[in-house]
Image (cartoon, rainbow, N blue to C red; front, side, top):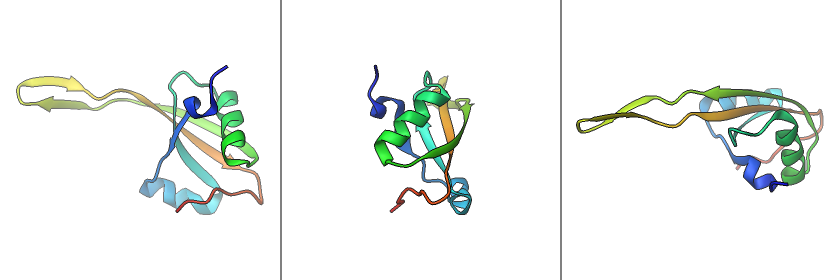
Length: 92
């Protein structure tokens, strides 16, 4: 079994994520192979909160260029997590 810290990589601090805080929703960068059940269990273990719902999306990498070589950044997975009423994560 994988560690919860292998599934949930980090909390995303973005403008869109800040707009979702009043709705009790948080954005997380998660492992691309993780499913919703693994994400929910990992967050409940790490932050000691109750998760109501998990929505995930895979964000495509962007094309980049370094000097004369073209390439892409890696694809990554984002989870939008809704917590149950009365629970929250301290974002400092």
